[in-house]
Amino acid sequence: MNQTDMQCVHLLELMGPLTPGKLAECTGLTTGGVTVVLDRLERAGLVRRERNPHDRRSVLIHLQPETLGRIDAHYAGIHAQLGAFLATYPEHDLKTVLEFLTKINSMRTPAK
Image (cartoon, rainbow, N blue to C red; front, side):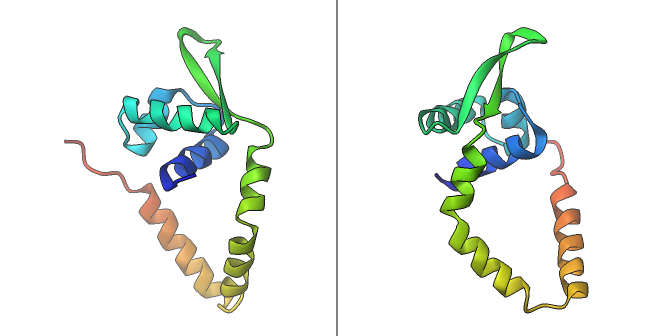
């Protein structure tokens, strides 16, 4: 699984089921690029496409229930190392880093 695949999985985890168009908007990918990612994630059994009950012309992308467990198991070693690393910093430093990341993630790029 590559970085773009993980980004889409995380967006689905955070936001719930999304249309491919919304995933494209959130990731900056083209709709064709999102289709390639979704095909790969679907073949791996991580997501499924379902008809959108509010718009019969579109589909919603759902995470498969076991997806997050499979990903967590794959990254367990990295998570343990990161936890040990973060434990070396005082809580007030971590709060500053979290504040910075929260602000930077909320920034939007100007419309072209």
